[in-house]
Image 1 (cartoon, rainbow, N blue to C red):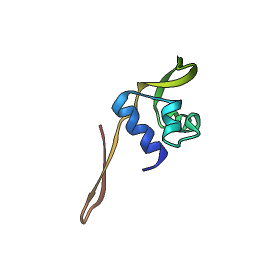
Image 2: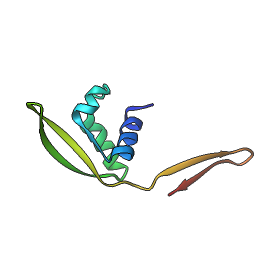
Image 3: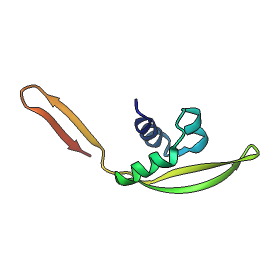
Image 4: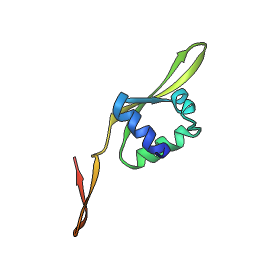
Length: 83
């Protein structure tokens, strides 16, 4: 699973990702991955939150793009569906 896949899974499950979560998953360049997602059509609300004597940076989903599903059909190839 790629870093982008891990981030998308977290966003779809919880609706947000944080810098500290990303670091715990060994994703050191969260801001860069979030830029990649913005280019794919995602929109985020960002917020600095004071936690445990430090500051954590959160990205909350405002809008996610249509989800792309790829189906492999024998004899035809791939069918792509957006929902």
